[in-house]
Length: 620
Image (cartoon, rainbow, N blue to C red; front, top):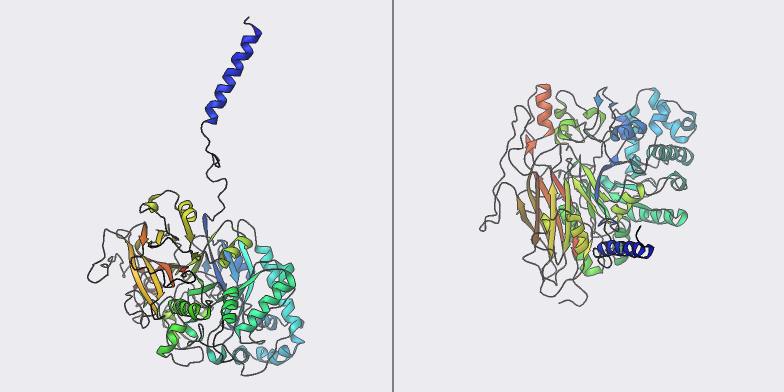
């Protein structure tokens, strides 16, 4: 038996040796797990913030008389439901979140009238419209709804019925909401349309029914003025301690009033207006069924992809479009106007992130080209639906779009809402492409090859939706960009950066840069254009192959024309290779002739929220 003393000493030496072995690894201020202290968003969540159910008067009038909010939630979660036309329908994959945005005006009134519920029959509205329903003249009642929305007749809704209908809406959302799994936002649509100009906003609450029920929806019957809506939002937060925001709709039907030069009182915009609008409307619906609103060829003649699913006929009142209106309607035009107002007012009223959503009135946010269930129930799949007419437009012109991608830390109302507030969101026309955008001053040229691009991006820069702080003298900003195709979709054609800035005279300018191209293509230095990617589409079979394009594209791009004294914004546009349009899928399925007023194939796309650069105070 060895001496006790020597055994203890040996053990001490052994333990201390082992401790020394382990103590050599750590570096001051770090932990072994590189993710322990990371709190930035790693997941993109997919959803739709603009879906109408049978509770909306227009949806109900045009055929959606049975697809309830509960069915809409089940559908969004990936279940098969039966549509208004009696067809089984299901998403290719569940959504992560949804906002059922039924119109605040006469919320739930038409279904209640159809069921002859005493709660509505005993109101002034019920006594006025019940006889019309009894005679099968629901469309006459709906005509009065539209007149009231346009302030042509005074037809107030019953506050008691509205409160009851609202409580049913909030209760259904709370029942469907499952934190960490599926988010059902509480909200509604404020449907302002003076003279037929589309100024609609979707109101989104961060809160549950306990807070949302302390108010009733503010509708266009209360006011057409967005500033009155913002006062309502402020009053809600003051009263409840909750949080709320508003999302303006695609402005292509606003006839120049979505991004106005004057407020509704006719007064020039002020710094207070700019600050208030920026506070309540941090994001903007850029693409949806009623057309794409990112850019317009009249405003961007040098952008070969600006004319995409363009709706520019006029407003909802039939007033034709004039050229001057366009910059006050399209997202890129609004962003450029915002730079100018930021320069003159000291605050930017149009500093918004970009999302897509559907504006479906079928209760079904089904916007994939081969699974498009239209805007209204009357537009659901059937032979020759493309030839139908509504709102003076052929149904064929409706767009199978879009969705919102939200970078958030978890799938909860709180995390998703917070991401919307900070504008860390992007729009797609339907495909679920994964897109990252960061800006900074120190990204290495090969940073896009790092396996953890997010850690590099957040560690050395700012994400989409943010402001880029001033950099070192003489440096140009660098942009770390990554895009991957939808796993069930088409390869990517290219990644572009759209830059807007103010020139030395304070005039807005723009330029589109091709920063990553598939198939080894390069930009022609003479034309500054890249050759087309080609097409694998077979129109006769409504099919395509991923034999062209790339599954992912990434790069670090440095702005060659940066001027530190010029305000600017930058956002990314990602284009897929050509794929069949929904009208082509319809023609093949039903054995009909494709319509000739729309293209047979399209290039789906994504638009990120911008990153803004503002010169430091005193910068020449």
